[in-house]
Amino acid sequence: MFTPSPKSNGMVLHKTTEIAGLKIFYREAGTPGAPKLVLLHGFPASSYQYRNLLSRLASKFHLVSPDYPGFGNSDMPDPKTYEYSFDQTSAVVEAFLAKVGFTTFGLYVRDYGGPVGFRIVERHPEWLEWLIIQNTNAYEEGFSPVWDGLRDAYWKGKTAETERPLEAFLQADTVKTVYTHGHPNPELISPDNWNMDLHFLARPDAKRVQLDFFYDYRKNVELYAQWQAFLRRRQPSTIIFWGQDDIFFTPAGGEAYLRDLPKAEIHRLKSGHFALEDCLPYSTENMVAFYESLPQVRTPMSASR
Image 1 (cartoon, rainbow, N blue to C red):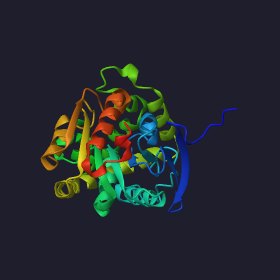
Image 2: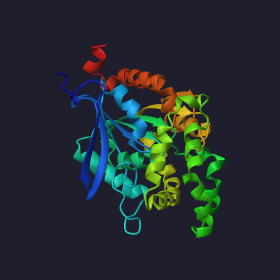
Image 3: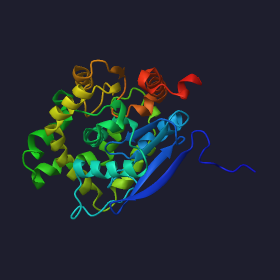
Image 4: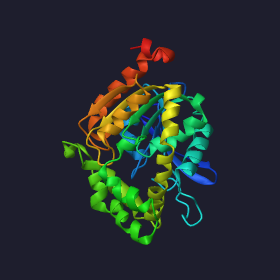
């Protein structure tokens, strides 16, 4: 009789741990002892966005991907008493990584994952081995016109009037559009993605949580120069995957990283905000090849190919 094993190739574990009194859900794959890789998700998603990548990379890496507080299967404390901010989220994720023993790793950042991850590795530069960037912004030229309502109104004065138009980003049609915009073959994008997000957005206070993050995003922009200086100074080995028709971030936002990381490898994808949904095989093959080309991280993984 076959007994399923967590060590079976490509299997993903679904786990929880407690951080600062909160239940934090996370997905884990691969074998302890393999090179570590952390995957940080974006809006309006959760670690679910990495379900396929986790399976594909499980034979090469030991991976974790947490759901932030207020997202996915993690706890969502009352926004009246809990601060939903990128500072707070990065502190929770930092404590999570320390607890699960991920203090030296490669880092995959996408969308909100950039502001969360950049805060963490700036505090702990020794944790970062290499970097994967996918459609996460750190430059002024990276903002598409979709951001105008936040930048020109909401961030300058948070009122019920300036907030009301932003609620459209949390409606069913818009959430679906975030997933399908810019993808030439939308039939490759599973509707499970937006249906999962809409399920979580239907919870009491969930939209309030997301609006709090929209407002707090302005503080990320204030840190852009600091993050750019960090990248320039540290020069982490970096591979960039950039969906060229992202609804939120422009192609120029991806190219801008090359100013501070001139040795970075960049892959321009005919895709959108969720490029892993339709560029998964290409992305995984190039991630593994890039990692195995790094002289400072040569491992038995390379020799066994």
